[in-house]
Length: 500
Ligand SMILES: CC(=O)N[C@H]1[C@@H](OP(=O)(O)OP(=O)(O)OC[C@H]2O[C@@H](n3ccc(=O)[nH]c3=O)[C@H](O)[C@@H]2O)O[C@H](CO)[C@@H](O)[C@@H]1O[C@H](C)C(=O)N[C@@H](C)C(=O)N[C@H](CCC(=O)O)C(=O)O
Ligand SMILES: Nc1ncnc2c1ncn2[C@@H]1O[C@H](COP(=O)(O)OP(=O)(O)OP(=O)(O)O)[C@@H](O)[C@H]1O
Ligand SMILES: N[C@H](CCC[C@H](N)C(=O)O)C(=O)O
Ligand SMILES: [Mg+2]
Image (cartoon, rainbow, N blue to C red):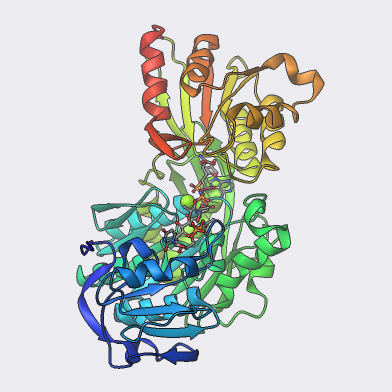
């Protein structure tokens, strides 16, 4: 029996015809006078009053589940291809793209919450969570009610709502935005992943601004080519309205491309040349960054030149939203980063520094290791623990292993969410990237707990142990099952166990 879940059912209802106003309908069969009380993309959540969207996915074609949804009493089916058997009591609406139709209908169903908010989207390979989370913290400190949609978690002010994706699907997304409107939020900061753009998760939303961080190698398993990946990111900037700001990183090779032919106001940030918002590095030290931002000097708690870019993007977005620059800098200088992003843990007895970081792309790993190289003392050795995700872009694997070996004194290659792949095969692909001259530095230990233990055992007093790739994640996903696993807790446990 179908039971309403808080997930997809709102307490409001709407007529099917009103929901279809923004949708190009190719054909429609069955009743037209239908009252809709919920939306779903999963046949298992279909039921009376609910619209079922048949989406073509990567593993399944949602069209095959139409009979299942109808059996559960679904009122409306939105599909690209009509099923052979049409039930007279069900409304079937044929569209060219079910995902696109779902986005427009979800926005309509929830009353276009994005139009009632200052919604800012952040896209790019790395730095989205950092920027979105810190913008949320900044605007809270500035006294606003605001929302956050991020990889780590969603938030309405301080209330935490668990996140399953970096960018939720269009139904969940509009539902969350509607809840934010209800909670009197004025601003919402969200990550816009490339998957989200391609899958129309953000279609139909009204943005007050868009921010681009950077583009480097990731997700080529999904997008196929780097060009397609770039196009996905650019697709977000292309949907920004004239009233929105389009803020890009002028120092990234793809930064200027993002602004080509956009309707939004073109703005940029740079550490190197002319831009709307200019930064200059004064010092990158173990206690934080010292920067000059638009001619004003400020000290920040974040570490690493890559974070100087994140800080400039955050500062720029806040100023473009109308905040006073001096106040923004004052508050920003006191803020910490998102959980699991360059998060230090100190072993008390031996002064070994543990660093938990979410670097899961070659660019991120290189940046983090270079940052460590810049701030460490010559006597401090660096031991890196890293793995690569299963059922994700395999081309990253040899590159990340090479970087770990070349930029550390020792590297321990291990597992990071093998998912449905064989962990040993992932590790072999990683090992293949390690240059012969570096092989002596590298150990391979599939069990992540053992890998962290070994790294801690190898560390001498004062050394640095970087545990990369999982950051805030509190699980290890193996064959569809997520077992508890938290790098931060395991590292602390090993410091204690080994008397460090
Ligand atoms: C590759 C990808 O994006 N996959 C997403 C996609 O799943 P899929 O294409 O595999 O779906 P499918 O299993 O083929 O099913 C097709 C359709 O049939 C439906 N179905 C399926 C079974 C059933 O019994 N009944 C039914 O109706 C499904 O709900 C779906 O609508 O659609 C699903 C429903 O929205 C998503 O949950 C799923 O995210 C998966 C879990 C995922 O891991 N996505 C990752 C790669 C992702 O999206 N990552 C980005 C961030 C990346 C970054 O941060 O850089 C993100 O935004 O999170
Ligand atoms: N601006 C940046 N440039 C390069 N690397 C960065 C930048 N900001 C963060 N990183 C690195 O990338 C890692 C992930 O950062 P963050 O979580 O902010 O990115 P994200 O874009 O949200 O990632 P995801 O795609 O998983 O959502 C960090 O732990 C750090 O190693
Ligand atoms: N948003 C990224 C996170 C990767 C994190 C890493 N720990 C992994 O599992 O590969 C993804 O879904 O590809
Ligand atoms: Mg993220």
